[in-house]
Image 1 (cartoon, one colour):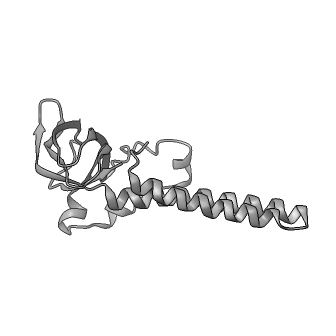
Image 2: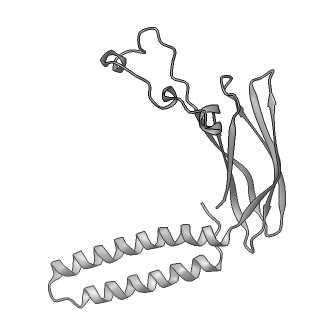
Image 3: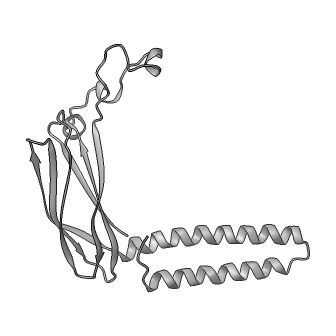
Length: 182
């Protein structure tokens, strides 16, 4: 769930007024079947508008930034840790901050792309078994999401640290970080 600010309430109030106007307009119809279908359509469209408006208002009012992000591989446990600071640079409180980490293996990152990275030949029997003694598929991209802060006030910064398993067959990895405020 997201924390609402006054922009959320303004937009939702406008959508509610449009919905009430549509329902009143539908009730003025003489044909009851037409009135019911109009009311259903107005409510459905208003619901979609409300959901998308909450997402759009969140995108433009809740702004977070990452600072001093570092990573460290822990070879003894085959994990990787990311740590740093997350900062609320917007004017509104944020209920939940999510960090998305995407690791891409060597071929996609350095331009050393081979056909085997994208195409794995298979046969009809591969649908029913693990293949003919072939090794299991090793994904070349790993994406993880973590909640790194909750209830972040405007101007507040919090330290975070996350761990996850690092694929041992990765080399020359490219990393992409995205942060979202909800």
